[in-house]
Image (cartoon, rainbow, N blue to C red; front, side, top):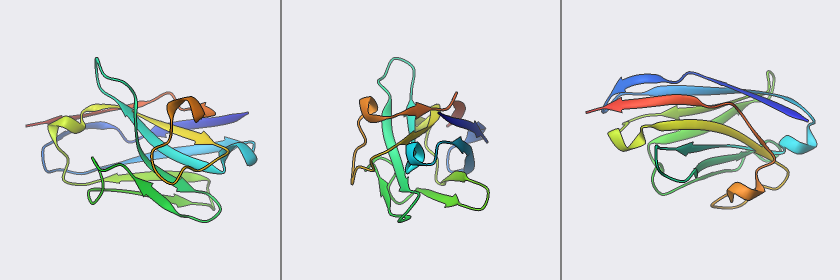
Length: 125
């Protein structure tokens, strides 16, 4: 069992920044891979970033590459998503995710083992 608790969402104007946090606990094997997904109203949930808890390798979707940075603090088992140069199209519910296998690229939703409850990010123009 893994518990993921997100925080840090909110409202910001276009061009601004936000940092999301995800506190992870529980079975270490099941959170070898941690990442972030997002889901906008009426759209499918999409993968945006991954970090390996063992190698610290990171992977990003093209939609956020160069603007978002995923990082981890192993001392307190927290994963962060620093979001810069935010755009209105980044508006979505953001979910922390964990899994056993780290994909070197897009992480299929069906392959996620555990989800956090989500945190809302709203970017106004």
